Amino acid sequence: MTNFDIKKVLLVKYGEISLRKGNRSYYENRVMDTIRYNIRDIEGDIRVRREQGRFLIEDMNKDLDVNLVLQRIKFIFGITGFCICTKTSERSIEVLEDIAATFFSNVYSAAKSFRVSTKRSDKTYPLKSGDVSAKIGERILNTLPCIRVDLHNPEVVLWVEIRNHVYFYVDSVAGVGGLPYGASGRGVVLLSGGLDSPIAGYLSARRGVEIYPVYFHSPPFVSERAADKVRDLTQVIGRYTGQIKLNIIPFTDVQLFLRDNVHEEKLTIMLKRAMLRIASKYADTVKAHCLITGDSIGQVASQTMHSIAAVNSAAKHAIIRPLATIDKQQIIDIAKDIGTFEISIRPYDDCCTLFVAKHPENKPNTTVIERIEAKLMEELDNLIAKAIEGSSIETI
Image (cartoon, rainbow, N blue to C red; front, side, top):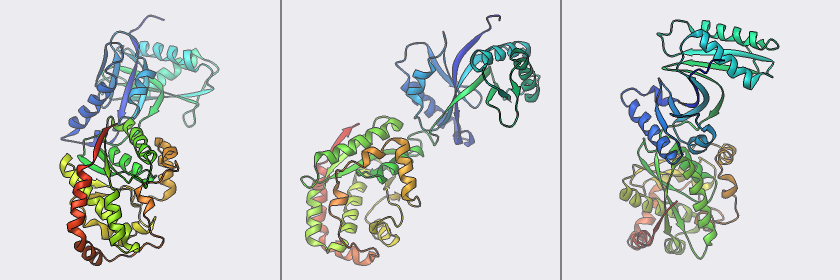
């Protein structure tokens, strides 16, 4: 075959970003900037640019090392899929037939059935999508006489996209979807070593929220291994977000004070209110717009509707609860999918599990809780201030 202008590239698909109107370019630019940053040290003259509703990643001088690039960018939020393509600037249908037949026979000659599907984004192209598919399909049939066309359940689908250039592909890799990280403001995540809160942080980040996790550490009641769990969980989430600042807050004195001054059945609610107060102050520092927790309605006594209502007034900011209506099995499935499950089930307790009452109140009265807390606020405020002063931020 004639040595046509062909090259291996990546076409990057994005989902709901394409539905944005006035600010679509803002979201597109954030994703492209993240792609460029993640592949900045890969050798070659690699370019990232728009291509009629897609992003195109190519090496200007040779085939793109698609596997290496995919390792760097497959977890970027806002991307729904990656198509490993053969790209050409040729436009003649006869030439495209040759390229498609060679591409297909080199890789998929053992396939028993196929279908060609064409998307013609360039409406100036003289042939309609169905005509392009028919001509390319006929050429493949002539090249591989043992194969047959199956329009409904083919073994292989050859996709043809006619844009500024023409692209052929079969293989694609799913992206994680969502919105570009940081495009939806900032949130402080109350992060523990359990299953739920890391998923809440991940789901918020997937919707474009830049997350600032805080972890409440209670030595000597919990070991440093509990803090290491949280560091490891943060690192997993960082695969999707990039670098994260984890704020580790010493919480022992606050816990002991509340344990000694609050009835046991109300202790969990009071501890959560203290955490929200600290998280709100940190949110002011980092200019965050919300707090994010791993509460799932009815999962435990502290997550009944009465309990959720009883802690809300302690926060200055809106509280986002991504897991509110998700059951435990769904949470476990997400944890396994993103890689936090095995870390979360390590047998090291955090402050949220050590001071749980045997019979916690599951229908607390908000007014009563606030009245009890008001009597303790002078000392509690001092302890909260000391906890914030003693916090340490680690870049992970």
